[in-house]
Image 1 (cartoon, rainbow, N blue to C red):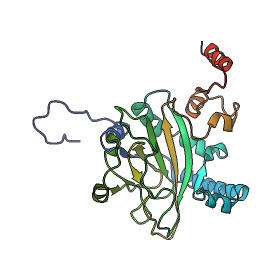
Image 2: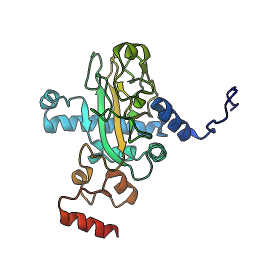
Image 3: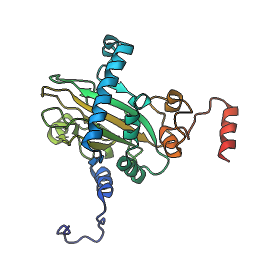
Image 4: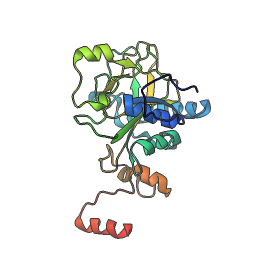
Amino acid sequence: MDPVSRYGVRIALPAGDAIDEAAESLRLLGFAVVDSGLDEAALGALRRDFDALRAVRADRFGAARLAAIGEGELLRCPLAEAPSFLALAANPAILALCERLIGPGFVLNQQNGIVNPAGAETYSQSPWHRDLPYQHFTSSRPLAINALFCLDRFTLENGATYVIAASHKEEAFPSAALVRREARQITAPAGHFIVLDCMAYHCGGENRSAADRRAVNHVYTIAMMRQQIDLPATLGDGFTTDPALRQLLGFAHPQPRSIEEWYAIRERKR
């Protein structure tokens, strides 16, 4: 690719691969779109697993109960029951991106399926928010990355995610005038991730189409952040013996429940 015409520039970032480009976009703008590399067969299997597990959860917990507590459009921790979602959370492109932005030792903080209902003016993700809610700070590098996997194509019509570029660099939520002027929708093909710095303000748009729009959100964080759901406790110690998966799921960072457990963890590390 030919270099961009410029003058008076003494320092410039070199061209890199697709992961380098995504990392640069995240640092500068707070978002990027990344191809998962999954083929149509794998994408179709994920959709079937998503719909089947959603029906199972509604039957187990009660659809009315889930709706009453604001969980009707959410599918918490699907990897606990469907191996396809564990593989999705361990997508090589996303893990490589997290490695470059967060550094080694990051963990999966949460995985949630999200449905943007057809014809609904609002849903659970409609309000503007950060994926580290209630936090107002900036940092020199990301502490958490949000990777929203598009099970369905994200379009302007079906409520593609809105984002305010570079808002991860400001502590306060922008003024209403700026939000209305600068908010932009991020469209993406099915099988791609919309990746955000978790401090970037974003929201879901109105789904004006005739079909629900499905996605699976992932948040990867530095290890010191508490997981949304305690994955080691939920999955059980025998869930996997793979060292890389155990690190990703948080098994390498147990929370001691006593001084004795703290000492035992220290002894194992040595």
